Image (tube, rainbow, N blue to C red):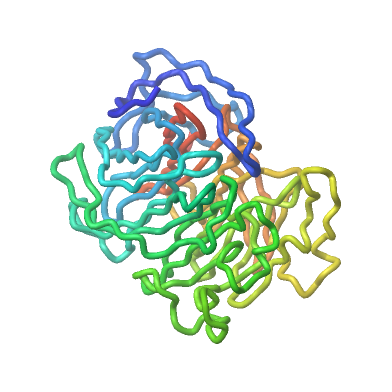
Amino acid sequence: MRIPFLTLGLLPVALCSASCGGAEPGNSSSTPPSPSATAPSPAGYAPGQPVTLDGDAPFQAASLGEFAEPWALALAPGTRTLFVTERAGTMKFVDLATGRVGEVTGLPQVDYAGQGGLGDVAFLPGESNATLGGRTIYLSWAEAGDGDTRGAALGRGTLTCSSDVACRVENLQVIWRQQPKVTGAGHYSHRIAFSPDGQHLFLASGERQKKTPAQDLAVNLGKVLRLNLDGTAAGGNPFADRGGVSPEIWTLGHRNILGLQFDSQGRLWDLEHGPKGGDELNLVSAGDNYGWPIVSDGVDYDGTPIPDHDTRPEFHAAAIGWTPVIAPGDFLFYRGAMFPQWQEQALIPGLASKALVRVSINDERGTEEARHPFPERLRDIAEAPDGSLLLIEDGEGGRLLRLTPR
């Protein structure tokens, strides 16, 4: 059931979604609390319905409502308004101060199949308007091509708002596309990250479950790209002299990147799905090759072995890897004051693992510090202005949760 405008009431949840491959595992559900119950709320934030978590969790959770197959979260800079993309091609926004939910129109037509649909949403960090309207908005999505082909696209437009529950994307233009479009409906990646100085846009481009394009500099599949804000190739990229799409490429040898974030030191990291094993958190360094599909610390889905990373030291090894997989949805580096002991740690919502995974970073190495279980698969995470955490569950009826210290 799709809910066009959400209230703070907690509804039963039934979740299903793809992880590393195209399959969709069985659903699970949680028992809703009493409709009259409300959770404590930080000052200036709307209350929510309490959610039962493991008794050892260092936080409490409140639900702010449900969404239809949510994929990405983004706070509009300078506001307490959270935007949520839904994979079938819709987008909502939540005023965290009031709990009011609105809808965004003017969205692109998406190829909704497999892992495809509406993807990431991002705002220029320097545009911290007091109001929502008038700011630049970036969207990524799966776009149909000729025949049975498709690929990721990136668009840029202007957000306009006619009321506190209605916004529209105006003048949306495609500024980048995966080349070539191919068959299949997986591994789009299409995560967006802006450089700390706001001058460049970094974009994750998955290898579309085709493996070998990740090593081919003539295509932009299986790469991290560094672009200007208008989608053109940024100057000074490591393969600029090769022509074609190569001037876009920052790094190569990637599989399916579901997270792309800068840390407080200005370093770029990616989080990607391995095959059967071998999920990776990587420090992204200009010109480096991360080895897929030549090496991986996992095996192929049919059991075919793949040489481990340590057999080929010329490829950039992961800061930390996971076998069995955690199947990450996205991640962030925590910088808030509400959980001071977690500052600078990577907080990773897990799909198959149904957990919030915390990883500390020491130089270029990662260490898993804790794994906090949740009742459902977790898709994305954002940090609210007060330092509370916003988590969204995966699948149809995925709840938006706000975490505060217990």
